[in-house]
Each structure stands twice: as structure tokens, then as C-alpha cells.
Length: 398
Image: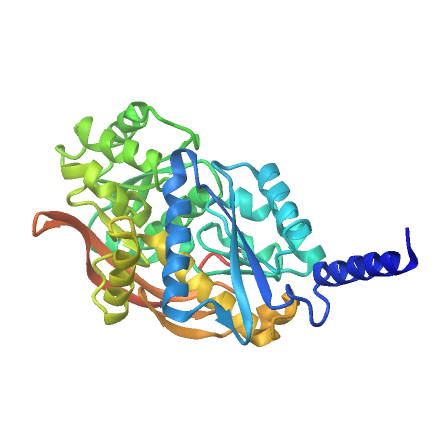
């Protein structure tokens, strides 16, 4: 090998190494990668689709460059709750893809699994959905733009009590958010004078809900409070409530808005009519920002029919990440990035939101909605709003 060729080769290796490490002047230094972990296949694939489409809507409206840095989203498929796989995907994103941010996470166990990694790598993690209150307590680098079960359930339980209902059965999926919802409803409802006559916890993968419906019937409850993760489980539960005669018997159905997410309404049909929910977003939300969001979504994808709560979680999550990138000048510094968004407030398609400095979770309006037909189409009509709702479950009982 000639001396000239050897010098040229070593120079090429040095330049490549500099680019990989993000050194000054490298072609890669201006690209900031965000790793998004979510289900893009399997029974919950619609969730990943809503995340990705909402991010694309945000970038179409706000551009792909922040403070001179190009923001690129890298997607990894996690088809169902699997903490070990979630951690493995996060490690791959950090080590191989060199991401500066993690985001997404539909299920709580998957979000919790990456806590040690984001602390060790000093990388912020913006949660688009996972709704157990305790998540943000596990690492100071978590920020959440979705909701929690406590946040949705406390105003709902107060509303149920004001309807004169005194006996309620709770039915929840047996994992973190479900237990949060059960606890929040029971504590709030019984403080208001009601009684929870049965507390049913259902395996996360339940498909046969008839035995649970029989328990509800036998309990003598006037109403049910139910939470299951949006998707096949909520579809099955809502159908079973109608098919087993509980709806016809006059038992009222309450729950967080996962039960009646917009993509499921056409399949649920009349079984969804009359279900009362509390949630942070409805396609029917009356605001110019929401109309612009839906219009851009339709322009890009031909339809806005699947837009739902996971969409605004991702859309606002992208907004928070952009603010972090701006505040850090594109440098990788998780602690500084999170500090920059504490107290951050903005107007969202869902309404006014703010990142609470202590919990790093959104304070927002929670809406009381009733599912009804309007102009031949099912929708979640907002009938009341409860402004400035915090995460009541953050450090609950501590």
C-alpha cells in the first residue's frame, strides 16, 4: 500500500468516525433523531398509525427543521405489551440509530422498562399515551403529553355521584392504568356518598366478557365504570355490555374515552350510543385549531376518520420535542431538555395544555362526552368541560 493511499484511507476513516460521533462540521450533526416505539402491527396497529400520521401532520404544519437542525423520526414496532422487547428496541435506537430522544409508548409496562436506559444515557422520553400516574416518578427524564386514568376518572366519578347514582360496579383491565382507574373512581365516588358494589379486574388479554357481565348484573349495580386499553378489548367489552342485556336493563355505562375511541365507533354502532365518558379529546371538539388539524390530516391521508386521543398525544408530543431541540441548540442533554419544558403552555387541538413542572405531565381540560349520532355519524359530543385538571395520582398517598 502506497503512503499516499494509506494517508487517504486513514483520512476517510477519520472523517467517517467524526460524522458518526456527531463531530463539528459533520454532515450528520444537523440531523436529530427521535425514536418512536409503538405498535405498528398486530391488534393495536392503529395506535402506531395514529402516532405516525399525527407527527407527519405536525411536521407538515411546522416544518422539519428546528434552530437549524433537521428532526427525523425513526419508528420501531412493538405489537403488544412486552417490557423486555421495549427495552431492547430502545437500546437499539440509542446505540445503533444514535437517537437523541425517545417517544411513543402505548402500554405502561413498555414505558417503565426504559427508565434505567434514559437515565444512563441522559435522553428525554416523551410519552404519547401510557397512562399510569407513577411513570413520571420513575425517572426525571419522562414527560407525558397524553393523560392519566386519575386525571380522567376523578371528574367522572364526581359527575356520576351528582346524577343520584349510588351503586356502581367497576370493571378494569388488570394492569397499572386499570388499577389507577379503579382506585380513583372508588375513592372519589365513595367520598361523594356512593358505593362500589363490586370491583372486577380482567386479564389484559380477555376476549370473553360474558362472565364479567353476569357479575355486574348480580351485583345490583345501577351503573358501571369500565377501563380497558383502546382496541379489540374495548370493542369486545362494549359489545358484550349491549349483547348480554345490561344496556337494555337500564344499567348506565361510564368510563374514560378509550371505550369509545373514534376509529371503533363505526364497528360499535348502536352499542356505543349513550355511553358517557370523560376524556381529553374528541374529534368533535369545537375549535379552529382542531378543525385545522383535522383538515391537514385529511389533506395528507385522504381521511381524518382514525384521528383520536392517541393522535393528539403524538401531535403535542412532537411540539414538546421541537421545544426541547430548540432549547438545547440540538445538543444531546436530557436534563436540560426536560427542564426547558417544565411549565410550558400552548394551545392544542384538544384545548389549552401546560406541562406541570413537578409531575412533568399535562394539565388540561377534561371533557364530559356522550356518544350519539349526528348527521348519521357516531361522535363523542362534548357536553361539559372540567378545566385545569392535574394528575391526581401523581405521588398519591405519599
